[in-house]
Length: 112
Length: 112
Image (tube, rainbow over the protein chains, first blue to last red):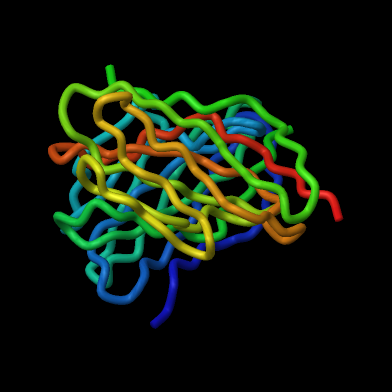
C-alpha cells in the first residue's frame, strides 16, 4: 500500500510569485485535504477536494486554489506569494465518509 | 466554535518516565478525537483515535481515553523512550465536517 506522497520537498520563492504543490493520495483514498502549518503552530485547514470538486474551505483567501484529478491526486496553487505564506504545506488523504486522514511528509515553502 | 487546547511544552522527561500530555476540546456535538505525532522534519503520523465517549485509543504503548464529561483526551505512556521525542498534536473532527481542528502541539523531549 502506497502512502501519501508530496512534491517537491522544499522550495524557495520570492514575494509575488506563484507556486504549485503536488500530492498523490494513498491508494484507495478518494478525498484530499490541504493544511498549512506555520512554524511552531498546529496545521490549519485550507480546503478539501472530493470527486474533483472543492468540498469545503477554511479561512484562506482566493489566491489559494486547488485541483483534484481523476486519479485523486491534487494540486495546491498559491498566487501572489506573501512572506507569511512561508510554512509547511501538508496534504492528507482519506476515504469519503471516513473521519481519519493520513498525511504526507509535507512541502516546506520559503518566501523571500 | 470548535477548538482544541493542549498543554504548552516543552515537556522534558527522563527515559522510562511516565508521560501525560493534556488535551481538552470544545465542540458543539460529538467529535472524533485524534493524536498525531510529528518527528523533526516530517509530516504528521496518526498515533491513535477514539470516536465516541469512553472509547480508549492505543498504539505503541500510548493511550488516550475519550472523556465526554470533562471534554478531554489526555495522552499517556507508561515508560517513554528517547525515540518518542517529537511534537504531539491533539485534533478533532465533527461528523458533519471535513476538516481536522488541531491544537497548537506539545513538544516532548526525552533525555537518556
